[in-house]
Every structure is written in C-alpha cells, then in structure tokens.
Length: 630
Ligand code: ADP
Ligand code: MG
Image (cartoon, rainbow, N blue to C red; front, side, top):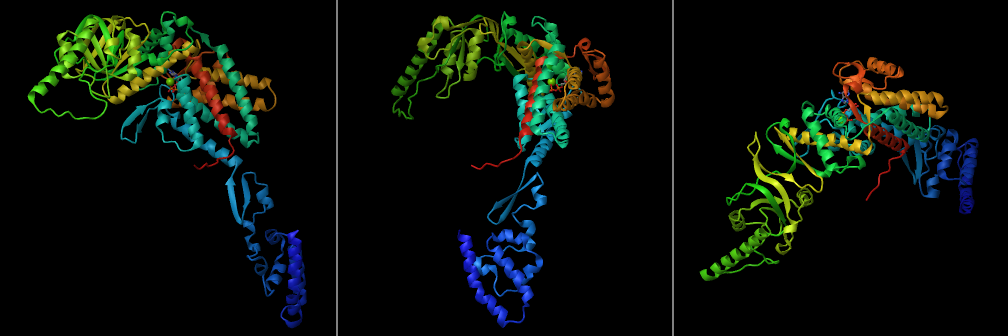
C-alpha cells in the first residue's frame, strides 16, 4: 500500500517541474518528454531494479534529460541499464543454465557453483587420487616413497598406508582415503584395489551422467550391481577349511607377492598363518572372527628379514637387567609381574628432608635398606624366580639396591614392562599382576619352561625369551628382523596384511582366484544379467561391468603387458567357462590361477566391491559443498 501512495506523492511533486519544463524551456521537444514521463509514472509502481530491465534506450535518454533524477526521489542511484548483466533478475540464459544460480542479496550478486559442477569437481578429485595409487596395484606394481613432515622416509606398496600419509585436502578425495581405511579394517588386504575400483566406477558415472541419467538412478543401480556381483562371486568361489594349511599359505603368498618383502614370502607366509591359527586355539572351526592384537610383533633391527621367527612364547625387546650380576637363564621359571615399586617410599607432596648429622643419615639408609630387603624377601617367599617390573611414572620402579638383593636371591629381573603390555603378558604367561607386595601370592605366578637372554645374530642385541609357556590366553609373538628401519617397518605392515588375509578366511571361508580372474568373472556375469534386465538398470549394470575390468587392465598395464589384448583374451576364456582364468604377470599370459595357487579370500574382493560402490554413490549424491564456520 505504501508504494502506490508514494507514487501518487511523487506524481504530485512532479507536476510543477513538468510544467516548468513544458512552458519555460524550449530545449526539450514535447515528443521527447511524453514517453519518458509515461514510463516513469508507470515505473514508480515497480521496484527500480525491475524497471531497469524493461526500459528502452530512447526513453532512458529522455528521462536523463529531466532536470532531476530518480536519485532525488528514492535517495539512491537508479540501476543503470548498462548493468543489465549484473541484474539480479535471472535473464533467460541464466535461468536455463542448471549449473549456475544467481541469488538476490541486497544489491550484490552472488553466484555459487551448484549441482553438476560440484559433482564433476568431486569426481575429478577422487579420480585423480585413484590414478595416483593405480601404479601400485599387483605384484609388478611400483612402490611409493613418502617423505613425512618430520623428514622421515617411508616406502610402501600398501594403498591404505600410502593414502593415509598423503596430504589430501579435497573432501571428496578424502572419502576415498577413508574408503581405503575401511577396507583395511574390514579385510586388511585389497586397499589399493578398492581405490582403483572406485576410480573406475566414478569414470563410469561421468559417462552415465553425461547421458542425462539422474545420479540417484545411477546410485541405486550401482548398489544393485554390487549386490549381484557379491552373489555371483560367492557362487564362483571355492570353500576352504581352516585345517587346510596349504591353501591358507597360498592365499597369504598372493597377498605378500605385491609387497616390498615379496622375496621373503616363503618364510613370512607360514609365520603369518601359524601366528593366527595359534590364537584361534584348539577349535578354529567354530571361530567367526579373530583379534589380531593377540599377535605381538617385536621388531629388532639387525640381520635380515629371513631371520624373522614365530616365537613359541614371549619376547621382550630388551634383555634382562643384569647390572647387579643376577642370573640370565632360568629353567622351570615361576614368574611374578609386579606393579609396585622396589625403591624407597616417597611422600605424595614434594618435600625436603634436611639431615644434619651422620647418625641420622645412617639411620635413613638403614631403614631404606630394611624396607627394600623386606619387599624382596616377600617376593622370594612366593617362590618366584623371575620378576617382571612394570614401568612407573611416580617414582623409580627399582633401584640399584633392589636389583642387588634380587640378584643375590637368584631372581632374574626384567624391567620396564609397559602398562599396555601387562594384559598380553598375563594372558601369555598365565600370571596375575600384583599391585601391592601383600597381594603377591604363589597362585599369581606364571610359568615357563625356560626364560633367558638370547643374543640376536647380526646386531649382537639381547632380548629375553620365555619359552614353554602355559599360554592360556592363546597369544603369539613374531620376532621381526630387518637390516634397516624402512625394511623392518614395511615387513611389519606386510605380515600384518598377511595375517589379515587369514582373518578374512576365518570370517568368510571362501577362496577365489586372483590375478584379475574374480573381477573378470563378475564383470562377465553382470553383463549377462544386464542383457536379461531392461531399463536404466541394464544400462548401469553394463557400465558397472566395464568398470570392474579396471583390475585386470591395471594388472596387465603395470606388468608391462598389452592391456587390451590381455583383457579381451581373459574375457574370452571366462566366456568359455574357465572360471579361474587370470593374468600370469610373470609369464605375461592367461593361465588358470587356481593351478598357479594365486588365490585370495572372497571377503577381500566382495568388501572392495561393496565399499567402492558405497563411496562412489556417496560422492554421486553430493550436489553442493557448503563451508561451515566455527
Ligand atoms: P591391494 O592393496 O589391493 O591388495 P596389491 O598390490 O596387493 O593391491 O595387488 C592385488 C592384486 O594383485 C589382486 O587383484 C591380486 O589378484 C593380484 N595378484 C597378486 N598376486 C598375483 C600374482 N602372482 N599374479 C597375478 N596377480 C596377482
Ligand atoms: Mg594386496
């Protein structure tokens, strides 16, 4: 209601001016004035911005010839028609462009990239990350050398390790990093494959999007395709028994074949299998999962990876404390794990004791001696001949005097047991930790047939080994050796991945052929399914099937073979019913992977397919990047 009133008021105000121009000035012809005025009167009922769009050029000239401007009336400059492109009212061209949105916010224009732009940018970023780790896939894949901010250098072939160390900034690319981490948690192996597969699926998405298929449609079809693939692969997979140690070793060797330590796979594979079977206990058949934290990896620099061993018992990475000349070898050991300190007591608060004469000093020393001797005697009384002392942060866990008494009593001492290791040690040795000397009873002692220092060949470093242990908690220890820190760290990661392969087989007891055989089989069967389906699903299934072939394609490419020839030949073999046909990367031809013993857990492949699909669908459904502050 205010605007019409305002326009009326303006009209009234204008009359004198108009008449003044009309009758006292001959400069402006009447023909020029009329349209300007008419337009102006009409325009007063609208917003000034809207007027700028519709006002013809001739009229504008006429209006500017008036002795006042709209600025005098409205208190601000009328938008000039030459600013048309900046006008917040969408022009037909702008309005019909789906990727651009213009917003009205005061007088300023805001443009945000939307929908397709965001989606394409996400896809490009994620694909770039996938391309980065693609060269690492397979036994002939390259390794990556990473320089950490601390200046440390790391060499790895494992996708999860490479990606976790990368400084990825793009949010969509970060999703791919998380996808790789998820695969590491779920299956342990296949962390490169999952990223490469996700990259190929995103590529397929770009094609489908450019054909005008809605992202939600694609996501739905991809989910169904992934589900179908997992079912088809399960049909093609072979069941495995955990008692079949050879099959487990072959599966682990396939995993290790692409690692930096692949030359040592003959030694590391049985170690990895046995270390996991050991923690499964006497009845591996009933196990549904396994906690790999029950396997302790002790790294020792020196020697070569070939000297790595599975220890039947426990190893501490430092020798026994022998400064007081105590024993270093004990048979039929009775082991006490103490959490109290074998040193003089301290007050809770900081204080100073001023001793003014020798007699008082002697008295203090005598009391301290008596106190420590009393503790040692109580330990000895329980029958313990090996004492493990937990690290203490409050005061010294032991001192020279206590070590001296224990040595005199013929007790072997191992110090600096980490708080985090206590549970593992107790489960292995069958002992219970004693928080106070009075709570240390003979029932709390663990047992071992032999405890003693062992000098490691190569470095001359000493470790303390416990053999013939009760092991009621079903744990195992692997003593890793390596000539330098880089090799040692990579060997540790590789053995962990190998153990994950066994864990995958515990979770799902199926094996499938590697070397691209599983993916080609899934791709072929999915294509057949696409032919039986109609509509959008059929189209998307076909694109999904094509994307699956990225694994054999990349394996061939990385092995220096001709990928197109290899993949088409592989397709043909599978079409003829050779389910196990895969790429023999060493000989550069297609062979039966089951005969070559290149087999891998079904869970590794199905989990990679599921996780890659999930990530791709998530990226696909994002249509905006919204910065959030605070
Ligand atoms: P990931 O981190 O995904 O496990 P890898 O570098 O370990 O990546 O490569 C795994 C791929 O290499 C799998 O597809 C597997 O089938 C294949 N592969 C492993 N060993 C062989 C082999 N000896 N011959 C052919 N392919 C192999
Ligand atoms: Mg692997």
